[in-house]
Image (cartoon, rainbow, N blue to C red; front, side):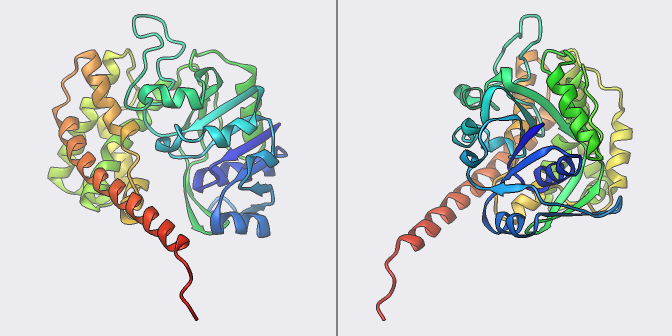
Length: 343
């Protein structure tokens, strides 16, 4: 199986290294010092389950790769709309895109029956921009239960979990899903093909919608949020409101709020990816995780006052981060374009 990893960051490089270890023909697309390290030394994965290394092909130009069987999309969801130019050289007639994203995916209502069939969630697919870049018929959903981080260029620290649940939007068990799952399993990962992947989406979302924005707003770890009585109650309210929206969409995850809170507490001083982004001055992955659920609540008539309040505050912070990120890029561009000083 020929696989391209578009966005070979912490999760993408980890999955790509495992796929390569299992015998797949893997090509990683990255940039900067991380790409330089991948080219020079490959990927090194550090894990309590056993360290390993892989040397897949790495590039910043997808035209060097050409069409593949699977594109594993390791980008943050806010970058999906702009990924078309990088994605197009990788697409053949049967290429599928495994989108390893948090939150509500752009394909959420694709393949469902009833009045919401093919409904577009505007928050995650504004003006159909993501659907144009990644046509929904190409999409394979993926819910990631692995936690990883980049320890240094070319070095991935695996923290916990090896499960990547995948599924077709219409619930079918397709050949493209089973082939990709076999490749993942050959590399030492868990990759169940789920006919009801939307249940997995909401189980994962219960944690993301709560701890990602709260950790960013309070600069706190998951254990600290759970350990404080008031913030624990806030987390509980956010999870209950999330489950209400899911129920009105016909999804009832088989996990309780208390069990989800207990699992977060066991994570200890884990710092969410959103908190890492804020500490680095990067915009948060907010739309798909929180704002989209508020949009869905309005769609189905659910009352979500807690989610709505946290969303408003988090979006205010995110606007400042977006402005700062744009200003930094403009300053960097101006510096690069400036003439060298006279000797």
